[in-house]
Length: 58
Image 1 (cartoon, rainbow, N blue to C red):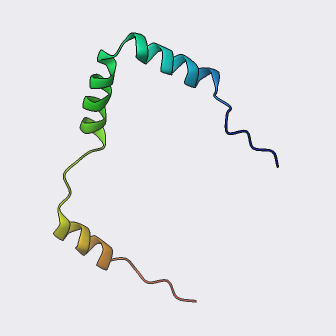
Image 2 (cartoon, rainbow, N blue to C red):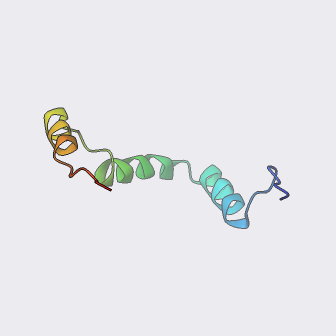
């Protein structure tokens, strides 16, 4: 299988150039990510969730 690491899609090229022309959008991107993904985690709740999983038996 041939893998070209120098390949860059048209979309990636477009976004790279567009972000170069609109650097203010990077801050909006960070705000959006924080809104949807970067949530504070409650370690106790994560521990309990990990312990409550049903074990798989064969």
